[in-house]
Amino acid sequence: MSEEKQSELEIIARRIRSRLVELSHQARAPHLGSALSCVDILTAAYWGCLKIDPAAPDDPLRDRFILSKGHAAPALYITLAFRSFFPENLLDTYTQDGGSLAEHPSPGCVPGLEAATGSLGHGLPIGLGMALAGRIQERSYRVYCLMSDGECNEGSVWEAAMLAPAHRLENVAVIIDYNRWQATGRSEEVMAIKPLKEKWQSFGWSAYEADGHNIGQLVGLMSNIPDGSGKPVSIIAHTIKGKGVSFMEDDNNWHYRIPTADEVNEAKRELGTLTP
Amino acid sequence: MRNAFAAELTALAQTDPRIVLLSGDIGNRLFNEFKERFPARFFNCGVAEANMTSMAAGMALSGLRPITYTIAPFVTTRCLEQIRVDICYHHVPVTIVGVGAGLSYAGLGATHHSCEDIGFLRMLPGMTVICPGDSVETRLALHSAMKQDNPVYIRIGKKGEPVVHDEEPEFTIGKAISLRKGNDICLLSTGNMLPEAAQAADLLETKNCSIGLYSFHTVKPLDEELLTDVFDRYKIVVTIEEHSRLGGFGSAVSEWLTDYAPHKARLLRIGSFDEFMHQAGSQSFARKFYEINAEAIVDKTLSLYKETIC
Image (tube, rainbow over all chains, first blue to last red; front, side, top):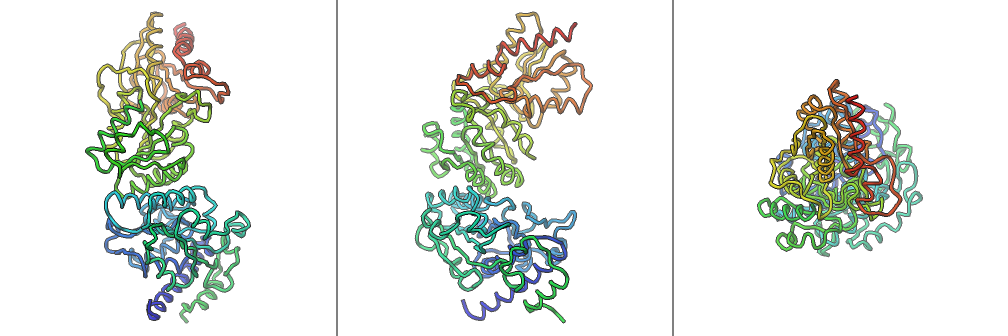
């Protein structure tokens, strides 16, 4: 990717982060750290890799992207809005009574949303179903599934991990937002998640490690699906929970904490989005 | 019932290219013909029911008509959350088929009994619950289910059950099938208890009772029109199911009755009691254990009948 393109995407990512902090404050909604963690992955996917058309969100040939870590829903909502799937002012209704944007996404709540998530460990199995459907219907779209490292606690993830290589689902990619935190502890202390890349390899996947905040590197890996190995692809994206706001980075209090008005301003100052 | 299911499914798949069969590592020879004719539409998903269920939802979201199939407790309660979230919340046309309903596999032990599935599944928003009474109804139920645009659970027995219907009845989801009409006692049977219920009806008629008998194959949605009719006409209405008395067909009818009382008839609910069976034994032993076999149905019914007419 050109430097120009990369810096363009970095600006988008900063805008998404800024809106996330605002929305968390406005809506008094948690999971800000988890949402900030995966912004660069979403940016790489939606601006650098996915074959999608906001004007035709139900195109049967489109690439599918499933946010399996549904608690990062506001990051996806903002991404889809900025990517013109729906008007940005709809974001102001996030979590409001009777609105379409809940803290975890409901089925079909906005154009471009592929699956309702929130209960962890569902996205990859759903994605495999979509990939097998594509094979039956002779459509060559790709399926991307963004999971959290905590989500890898779920047994259904590993059921799916065993099935996909058996069916040579090379058009499937998992991206793991490996921020090393889950709700109440270090992910490697709660469960023996390490060595994560080797786990996926031993399950028959083609596995890569990446800097989960290097948009150029993420675009490179995520665009290269299938990767020629004949296997599904797992990208272990090393990330920082709360990325982009210094006082939130790697501080797990921001799994649930809501930023104050002052903190919103400080965050926006850091992100370069504070308008004087 | 399972052979009828496999045969009907194979026939349906011939005309509907959206039909996909997902099996939880079961029914090896049962699906030979399906696999030979439609190899791209059969998936042995292994012993991983959660993944199988969510995959079916993903397929349905992509325009297909998947069927998930394995032993009843494993295709329902094992992966209940996947059914709830991925199938029901998305409201997609996945048909879940559980083989070995109730005590069909009694001998395998209580791990393989399924006496709670109707309760769990009928609570899920948008789910249709069908319990065919014999192999004829199994074919018809599957045929009807594949025309639905919503989630369906079909609960079937095993193989070799008696066939109750001499000829093909009219089958509509949500409409019970009349087998016998009477005045005193009305037996409403759901699922694989139908032959047992028919036997009970025969025995009760020898006691000079006038008996009605229905195959109440759809537990959700309930045939409320029929319920209104039989609760107004008969003295006793008996629900019969190979399922717990808690949460199943009898519970559904009693909920309905509470909402629409008063009615003339008394309700008697035949179903398994709130206990696991720890003993080994055949299906007929298990039905006797849980006091749901024809003799127990007759005894309980006559006891209430005497109380009612005195």
